[in-house]
Length: 140
Image (cartoon, rainbow, N blue to C red; front, side, top):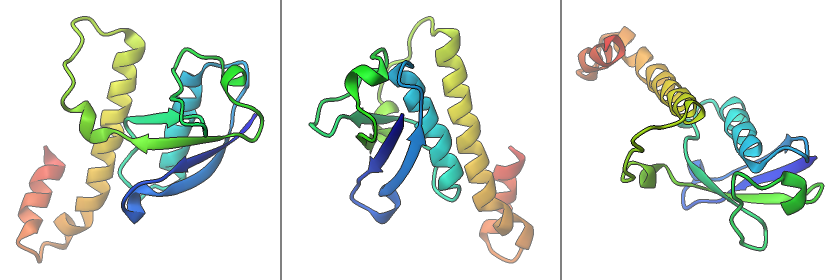
């Protein structure tokens, strides 16, 4: 299935539009993973997509366990909203599952890689007062 992905936000950096292709028999969680992966490939200079909500164009939020073809039609749009700030206030589960841990580690690795790409030129230039702090960040 072809799905149009729309991120609308308050700032220019929060707005994004792209297309993904998924198997309609997969669950919405696989659509979420595809959107996350493709977002990083299409917008490599933006902070990695960690947490977001997806809604049907009618405004109904999509749950991860739903079958894609049961909640979306071919060439449907999904409206997405970043929720990175909200996740920091959530309590951690006592015993997270393997898939949940892998998802969090993947997100963490993407965030670290993004920060490294941003500070590396400053650290290597060595001419700014922020160069030492940038190098320290890279080495940690």
